[in-house]
Amino acid sequence: MQKDIHPDYMDTEVSCGCGNSFTTRSTVEKLVVEICSACHPFYTGTMKYVDSAGRVEKFQKKYNWGKRKDTAEDET
Image (cartoon, rainbow, N blue to C red; front, side, top):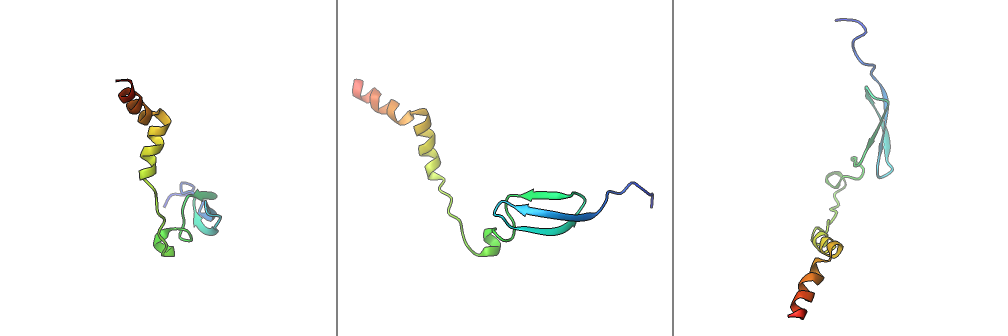
């Protein structure tokens, strides 16, 4: 094996968006992740409901599409 070509393998502090942090080993000093085993629905057993239907209404409200159709019908 060649010398001085391998990265350093060190203790790594991993911090999650939920506030949980733990130590593991890696070649980088610090990792920031969005989701971990403490807050992931598969490991916690809780399901998080995501309201995807609200996105359409938010888009229509942003670009005022709902009112365009109503005003066009009122003028005729």
